[in-house]
Amino acid sequence: MGVVAVVQSAADPRERRWLAGPGLVAETLSESGVVVGEKACAAIWVAIHIPLRHFNVAACADAAPTVARLAARGFRIGIVTARPLPAALVRRDLRDQGLPEVFEVVVTSGEIGLAKPHPRVFEVALEELGMDAGEVLMVGDSYAEDIVPAAGLGMNSVLKLNDRDPDPAWALASHQVRSLDDLLRLDLLGG
Image 1: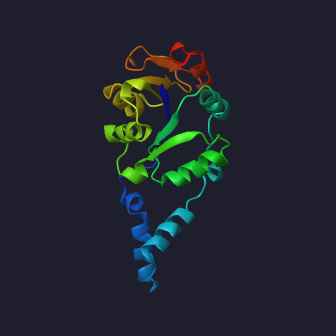
Image 2: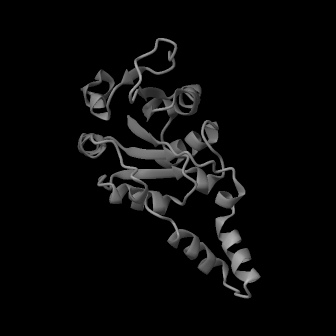
């Protein structure tokens, strides 16, 4: 079984500034009389990304050890995120936050141009993992944006509660957990 972990972002990738970032760099520079090639504009767009740590955003305290233990158990791990960035920048942020480099797949809304809960975001992760939905456990912290679309595709799903109490209305989640570490004790993961 694969595990697709989900990272959330408040940014709306449908905003023109996120989808057309390199083009806007070129447009802005040309307004100043500077002509830069497409590759250079894409590099500038990447270079101006400010790592999440500068905004006091960090992975859950138990994320790194849980991900490392799941990888050691042989699980294939990927991330689906609404972040409007290239996967390379998300990978850099994950490393920067101390997460092990075990993510086979990083699917970002910034690269595919769609935001969760659009099912295509999850389908791309399945395609890149080369797995069927029924073979994957999706972990997310938003019932509407993570659990509902994943379950709609046939994925098993776990809702990370954060500071919420379990709710029977969240019936599409096969489990509701308070921490990522709780994943290690689930029967479906050999816990």
